[in-house]
Length: 307
Ligand SMILES: NC(=O)c1ccc[n+]([C@@H]2O[C@H](COP(=O)([O-])OP(=O)(O)OC[C@H]3O[C@@H](n4cnc5c(N)ncnc54)[C@H](O)[C@@H]3O)[C@@H](O)[C@H]2O)c1
Image (cartoon, rainbow, N blue to C red; front, side, top):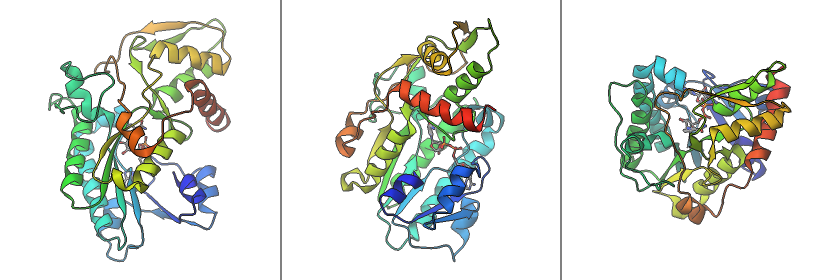
């Protein structure tokens, strides 16, 4: 995102407490460009600091507790912290003297309750009525935190665009995602071993990070997107996790088969966003093929992670 904003001539401030973000050479290269302010702070503390700069026109609120494992282990923190972080992002945005847009990164998980009850169309439009999953299931904490966040954005009285990311992937995303995990396991396979894959017949559409950034940036700068809730992702191709694993094996150069493992509990059988509204408003359709995106992701992980 920062690289893309710099290319367009913007000055950029990145605020992160590095609880999950990485201080790696890619970030250092951006920080050294002279056009980036890197602020190592908790967003809640920044929002409470009256001396915090007031000169941002676009605010992208991406900070959250994410990742299935963190959410399952810390549901209370996930719900409370994510709602508090959105409140902090709104407070900071309110103090910006020339705010043009606040972008809130919600999630495709907001559809999970409706998916569970078979109440969604595939592809899934933003107008789908949202239903909660069981409140005592830890996994609910994440989607509920994002539904509350969406509501706070609606009531904030600011020019806001809510975006619901669906399976965005690419370099620098850690290891809590199916694509880097499959790439790592394929990379480390020994001769004769097969690649074990969960939920092999579940389907997803995957969106490469460059496409997601382009859509988010266009949504932030298109007047008609203010006040909108938009899916962020790719509508096609919808592929099985088994097919994704085959693409991973071929990318990594392993001539072996995929071995089906049990489905992950709570994993939706199908997930595919209806991207008509986002494409119409932003003029952008995800264009990086899954094969190319996986190859570019593998190239980065091979150089930085799988050594
Ligand atoms: N990647 C996807 O496919 C996807 C899907 C659905 C939703 N999202 C949403 O998009 C956003 C970005 O996702 P991501 O995959 O890049 O996640 P990420 O964990 O890589 O990024 C979140 C960042 O927030 C920072 N952070 C956490 N708490 C903070 C705090 N108190 N103060 C300051 N910074 C803090 C973390 O250090 C991290 O760098 C998240 O809000 C996530 O819920 C992403």
